[in-house]
Image 1 (tube, rainbow, N blue to C red):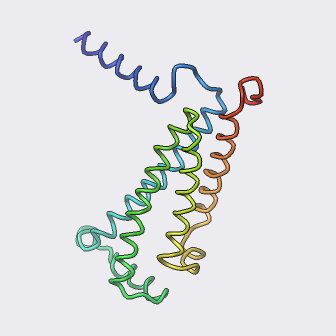
Image 2 (cartoon, rainbow, N blue to C red):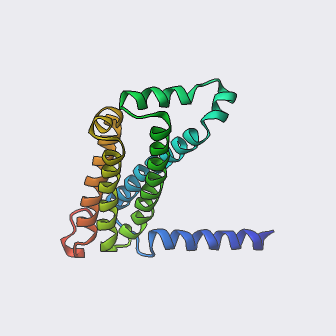
Image 3 (tube, one colour):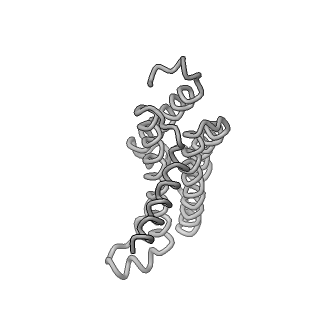
Length: 178
């Protein structure tokens, strides 16, 4: 029993070393890393749930007595879409968003380990997210259906990533956060 616990502890230590590195970063850099991960994970989770709900709207309608189809159809008509086209666009949009936000989440680990390319890829994926919304649904959808929370959260992720990148790529003696 003790051998199994020791093996689990060793695995957890190796995983912690792999994620956070052997040399610990400052508390501020670690906080910025966590903000990046939490923010990108929230968007990943939100789009995953939305994808599941839209994809399974008939099942949810039967189980929960909620007419998801009517909600989607009404909003689609307001934007000038048919139900089929709007629901297909929503499903594809959420699938693309899941991929983008999962990648941004994973790139947070590379950013933490001072991989410069991860910042640029992450930033380009966040910009791509906005372009996908506008391309699939138009500017009115972006203005009305993208909540202020989403816009502020994405802005926080972007600013946090920029500061994290700048601070993480400074020389040790130039660091103001340590």
